[in-house]
Picture 1 (tube, rainbow, N blue to C red):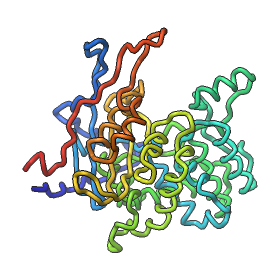
Picture 2 (picture 1 turned 135 degrees about the vertical axis):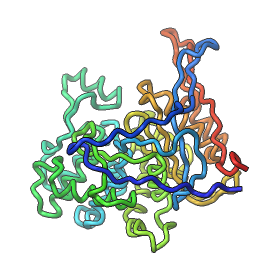
Picture 3 (picture 1 turned 45 degrees about the horizontal axis):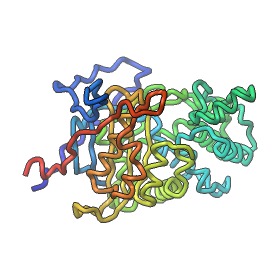
Length: 386
């Protein structure tokens, strides 16, 4: 027995920079515990959260917790926003390559190959990298690169920021359209309006209906229930699976290009030295696209393919860790375990992802001291009510 899809909640709302919104009531029940941090059998702490998997039509396939929990997309929005540049003719105008498209949709580690890729984009647009308005605090993400820069007395610039690829897309779009790129990051800039329009279409709403907030890199981010995040990632997994009667079908060509670039170059989505988005894509090549957002959010586009459960259509998975996952252990464990239970990761892939499946904390002598253990059941919805 399969549960019919629940009505999708409205995603419209006012800009949070304008009049105050009525706070959304919190669910009466706490989210389920997904991960336990244990030390010699003692539960030191727990991480709660919500998980939902949907198909391209938005029907819930698996869910645990509250699928209507409101989240801000943060960096998980990037694959959908890049559509604005591709639809404007950016691939032909700037001779964009797959690695360059992937880095604009990713959150890179700030390694040298990432810097060279973004610099090449900006040179082709004949603009200075000084236009990048991401800031540089806490960057680069790659620890070895950070150590090398400190050793050499070099201050990291904005181009090493994880969002510099995304911001380069705004600058390229501005050059292509003849807009002044100097203030591309401001809400009223036409490149931001084009980005909002692309995101709104991917989420089946209107730009004026987007609920926004300020992201960490200074541009707008958008808020949706996590089931809508999963639905958007299902679209990314199978852009051509959406019927032509669905307005989102207009995104099929650019989203296919973006998806395939990310699949082909996962090192540009994250980095060469263990980032989970990259590791997941490398563990099962051609099967999924993973893109994290801040504060414990992750979207996963699961491409069509036979699973042990008999499922074979594209779907989207969204995960939210309630506490923001400051230790970056719960999100890793939940992502791997969710994909295992969904039949996407086989034993070989799980072996490659062992360090993420049960993240371990060692003492100063290298002895294992604690580990994060994912303990939950993400059963198909039909099984839960059958």
